[in-house]
Image (cartoon, rainbow, N blue to C red; front, side, top):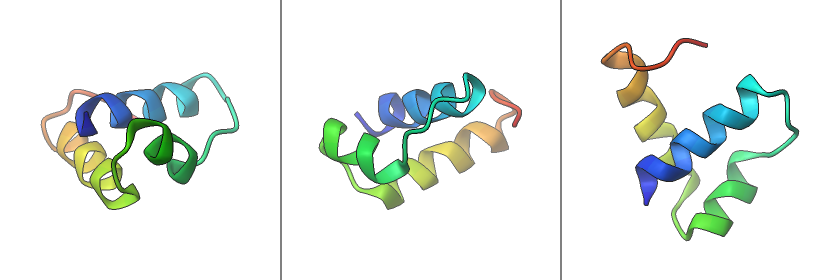
Length: 50
């Protein structure tokens, strides 16, 4: 669920939608820290560029 939340967050950034990590974390039932950690992991493996 954390990975899906991170993907949703990155999608919002890419599409210029105004959603916070908190909003997505609450909807996905994960923590904001989980989203940040999954985003870092995606960046580490060059899956995503921001």
